[in-house]
Length: 306
Image 1 (cartoon, rainbow, N blue to C red):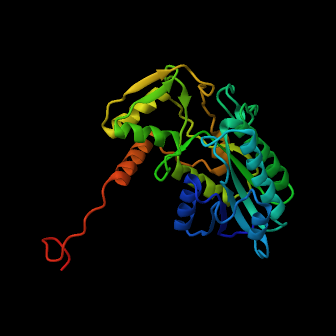
Image 2: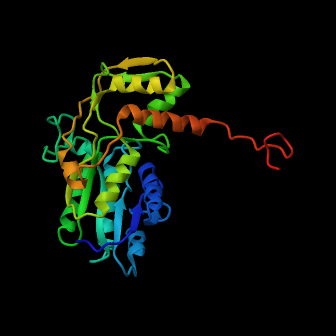
């Protein structure tokens, strides 16, 4: 068994998932060392080396740092993403890492995977981002065979409060709440499976503590048509959809998952939030975020502090 410790080092803690995971784990009693890009730019080998220099006891690691494909998907960003993992592996000395969870992507499967997708589905990425994720999985899993277990989590789409506008569902929800039109590529029949960020955090916590080594698809196992998902958002927001249609794009393909591998790795009692409930959590959080701050009661006013 892995030495039991509650120390976790998070790279990429300034992003949506990293910041949510840091708060989630801290609330559950973990000793969280949160590193943002400003604290440690993993593309700089010296910065990575400083994090591990003189570290005397093992730590669990959550690797969230990357250049998102939503920002840019080029050869240059692919090189940066691979450099981050290579620098981490070069910096960590034997015995310093107890276990590692790496956030990968279902982009490793490419645009036309056979359904349902399992961990044995052929990895045939078609874009630079997916190539970088698959390369990083290979680097980490090879290194982990010698020193520490690595769980490479292939994510289909994560959403939830504090998404900073970076999740696709968060972007759609904001537009629905503002009454803005949405563009749907194709007929809206594309199947998708989205995971609430707190459910992902539960998976991350379990895998940090276990000796699992290999890739895992993190999904609910219940895919829905994109058009039906948008109607769920509209119902939660109390708005009418204003849809625009465009020709199907290069990413307009179905995704549906067999989640038996995930449940076998983390436990059959894993509970994933249904999308209908999840979008309400998302919409409620966005409403609270947009609400003006409550004014403090004036001294002596009825109901105010005495």
